[in-house]
Length: 236
Length: 310
Image (cartoon, rainbow over all chains, first blue to last red; front, side, top):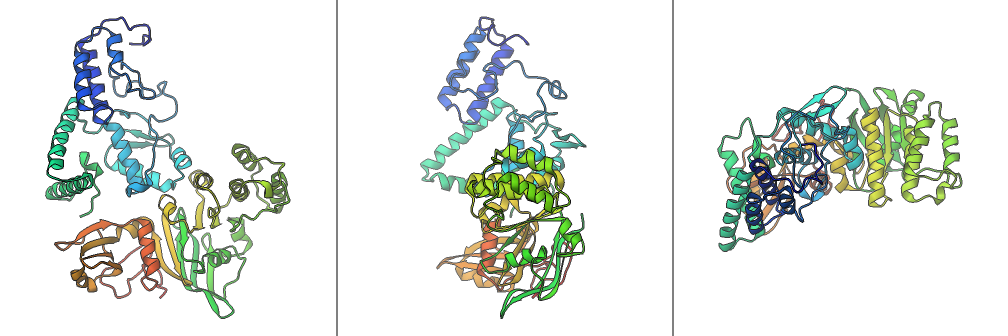
């Protein structure tokens, strides 16, 4: 697996590699870089690909900084993370959306959860150092500490004295093909909603209210914004 | 950490017949960025000047850094203050300012100051008056931080700066907080940026403390209720801070927590810092202060109970 990515384009690929590529495509689809038709087409081509070169082509126009076009087989979690060659930094960088109305600490929490779900963060990875976040975003250090405390309470991260905060668990991950399926059925629902006369804002309002009712109906105590419901504000 | 960086009791300051500050009771805990907010003339600058001892109170007391009388040598030792409009000698070079500040202070971290100015790319030979607004602000801040203060006071630090300079200035302040545990009290007009910077709020209005408390506590104890205007009167018994009413619909900013029941037909929304501040600024007679609520329906607790000012 350590061979250079560039000289092996003629090598024949295994089913495992085809599956891995389909998974990556589903990821791109899930975040909206591919539409349904393009996704179906590329997955079809992945399944019939013969060489690594064939697989590389499937990522045309989907370049992502730092990600190899054709991934090596998934790395073992925890394997290379500790003291590995990754360097002192964290795999992720935070950003802030001032217009979102979501409290700053919650934005950080959600971005970590999002990165976990999409595989940018794995168990053992270091979260950005508090000082670095403060320096780059000009936010209050207490806000970063609060976000990391919240992640610790959720069992997703743990502080190591003198070192920083590290990812401890992976988020109850939904398999990528399943994620793509959910995305697809949501698209179907959206089509129905639009046909019924709802515009984008109407759809957002309806979805938000249904989501709130859904989690409230589950008896709000305890895990008030647990797991996949992390995006909802726990306000009744 | 239970120390208060500023503590006042019955603090008043009168200029002629005008009370710039009147009967202020404050206890700002260490470890925060506390924002002093209020309209022009509310008393923000007066309060900061009293805290560094540049003014003396008309009545009442003010102490800093856990009981040191404001203006005493022990107090000044731990405080750095950057006044409004960037206090630099405009005809001196940055290098001269550095030299001057080092010689006027018995503690001055020359290595920090030089490294910081190099990092910022501030030309040392240039007269400070010829530096950009952002560079002047950063120079004044660097000189203040090189004194290694426990408490940094900033009066309208970013009012004159462009967005990038503002961001960089606040990043320097907050990094000092992360690295050295410096507590910060700043006055500001820029409401929109407060939310990411301040975690403690003091709202001054007409010389009085109108709101004081940790931002999280303040936000958690206020809600916006939206519902039919005809029913808005139903909330007469609730601690309503501010009402915005249309013909059919009304928004009420109330003191209540997310756990309080919301009546059918009404929707509750969390409130943002800016919205909260604006609502209080528009209602100078409403108050949210630590200690017992003044005969209102809901208890309102923030930190240590202290004297109620009004």
